[in-house]
Image (cartoon, rainbow, N blue to C red; front, side):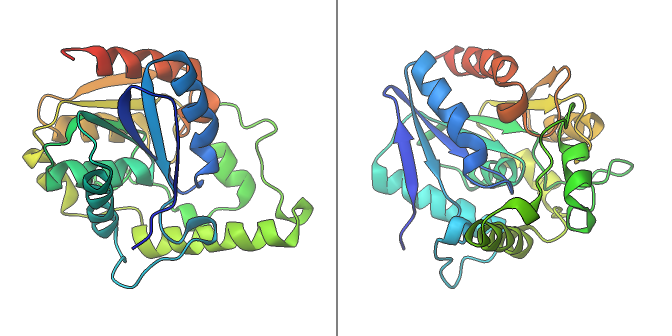
Length: 246
């Protein structure tokens, strides 16, 4: 199958996996990370997002993880750090569970996918656009999407992305994932925004606790999308983790 991706920079490979906000939500961060540090940042578009083809047989988050394991093999990459935000964090976790000698670091950034009693993932598909912004950002000022102001092609693209996300992630939870994370042997870092109301910090701490020996970092005045809202705060712990024991 064909996987669409972009890359920038040179150095240690970083597979950067976007969430439901689409590939545009990680592009600026990828550019900045590659400009400031010796990394080769590879940012795939999940099949079905932004008008790309979703082949038959690619139906679940686990299927996406299998696709990206194959991509790493196809590219012949070694010493790869996998970084994922939101559903991208879930994909990254599934990729680590699959296991690959090519992957040496795992970073979950405000991920979803596990079930945590008392800390449910918000009903994303039941929210209006202002409610999504309020849940996603510490300060949602100027970040509310108004589809009425967008060109028709952009509206179709956004609707397609939303439906693709629903197909892959459903209610954003796999009841089996939390227990399966015990199989992860890759050094892991879990980063969370203290103002995330898609999946709150208690959910994030539970995510870190489910991965053997994972570190947890809480970012202040940050919501569900640190790479957009607080890139400075995210780059620091991310780069320190990638350098550690390198």
